[in-house]
Length: 100
Image 1 (cartoon, rainbow, N blue to C red):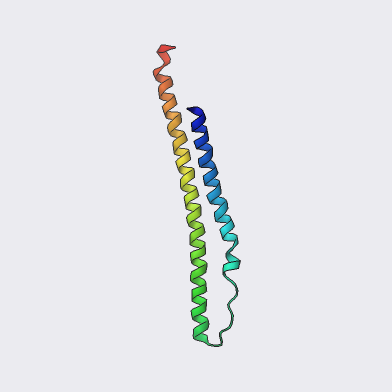
Image 2: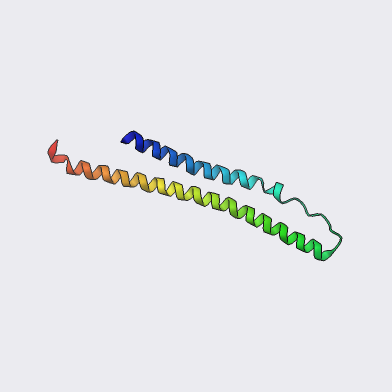
């Protein structure tokens, strides 16, 4: 059973790391999805294109933040799972003291 537990813990650690790595990689793509705006020749058009560009950049950052949030949640779950396992092992050790 302990080997299975170690596999789960390492899987959760790897998953959290992957979420964080992918969030960082996704953030690094921001210059590619937010190129400089071209002059459309009309101030209203330029303003509209600029607002759409800001929206795309905000959505891009928001998605990277969500990836980081998922990584944090997986890490928190892993830590909680580990604390729970330590508590359960301690309980069994306390119960078995007189049986040794």
